[in-house]
Length: 512
Image (cartoon, rainbow, N blue to C red; front, side, top):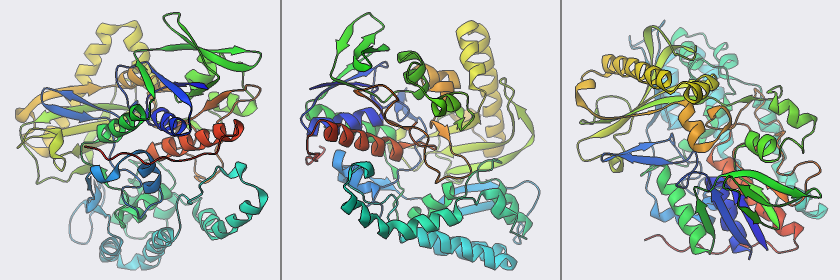
């Protein structure tokens, strides 16, 4: 049975692996010249620039995602780095009791608790409650080790889910807590301001940072040396070894439908490739409203399309620098205030800057050198996308001018940066959109709402359309690699169930 898969990102490659293991003939169609999608790296003049992977949930067996990754990747072939500090946040309006202005978000919970209590002894009650909640998270399987897609289990097996009731009760208890609501419980002004800045001034569910911290403490969210390419390169290798096929620079224009059955795909070259089943691991908006022409929608889908239910996740303007120096005397991830607001050409105003110094990964640069990236997030990606399409000269001018401002500000903070720059690479929201086709240049699909455990409104199947499945980071708000691999596995199980084939996992060969 032939299955066409659109997109060679993590979800597309993972779905292809699982389906090849179960005897299906699959072929992946990728519009770009390489694999990875948003999870990728690129090489420029001896430097490797990273799309944004900072940690991988499931880097050790302390987290259930390790088992999922191990189904597709030789995890022993990847070296992980676990940072002692997740990030350093420099506050602007307050100073702690030591006269410092930098808040250290330690990854070891014992050390973090001691640090917080030293900073704010008068806030012992909320601080200890926060640490207890992360300790509590460590006692649960997150995500639960459920081998089958829940809706496929018989009723007598679903009864076993009762053991996860304490987890649901716990998550329901903390679901409404955000960095802002928690900060309001804190008396110490330094700690209060630092908590407000956890998400660069945005109010988001506190669990977005506490859950990774809980697993940081158990070395379960390490950074893979080599960056994204090590993960996606392993996935591509596994997929090809299983007999899968990938066609690069093959842009899908339309999903062909006959009698409400997906029967194939049409490439922009006019070539028609028939199949029994079609999977889209591509952008959600492209899939539903371009490839399928908006014909298979309902009220929920239209609310998503109009961004009434959820907002699209931020895009990024990122300047990556190849630098003749290591800057080891600076934090690897620093967020600090600017003396005056920086206004992007797209209208977004910034009061802070975020710098990543990747000197902990020796594979990204020649010896004695490193890669430094400066990132700004925006929800005005359409400005850059439209400008590039309508006025290339203005686009290039504004891109260069804004990136130079960012470099100047980074140089003022780090000192001696500009004179050591050997290579500059600029990625705008238009860059993300052009290479990945993600709606509005989004880097993680949907932005999660304040209730982070609410059921996702995105389904893997569409109303009225048969032999079609959707997978990828758009399926659950927040997105990311864990969502991509889990949704791909679930879709593969659904296909096996619907075609009456027992789902199985084959052992992965060791990487060389």
